[in-house]
Length: 224
Image 1: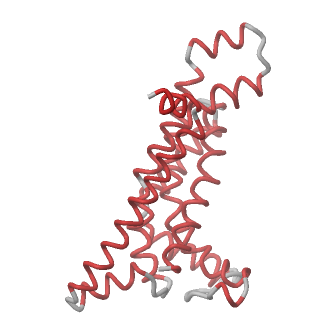
Image 2: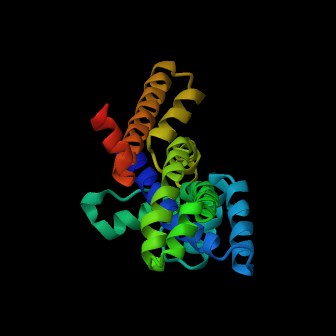
């Protein structure tokens, strides 16, 4: 379970670290060449399955460049750097398709907010651009992004199952696949229950973050 959790965590973090800045940049440079390039790369990343991305990353960074291990998992007890090197490629393999979904939602949500009348009013009142963007636009645009990000966490869980096989990591995904092949239904049911429980808990955490992003939700809960 720690191996699967580590890969999934890296995938989610990589997805957000890539998707949010690229989505903001794409929205603020609408219809420009950079926006079109980002859109093409996003659809390309979304169309490729995680296990294929894992093989491509393995060939580039492990076989050609030789800067990351080809396969296997290094425990955290042996050092943070070796541990991170062993999970960065599997994490990216499951995180890039996830980042594509979040990035498209970030772009469309931010564009919708920027076209609202209150943004035009804030601009007319002379509200500074940074305050207008980060306080009013970005904060309101993040609510649907967080919702979509939580729903699509199933992409991370499903991707981990195949990526663990590609990289030779014996995590929950590989155990479930092996139990299916061996027709060990008890292990299969237990593994699916653990993965489903993790998915539910993560979605609960996503719901709780709504009140952090938008104080109106917190005030509404207190008044009710």
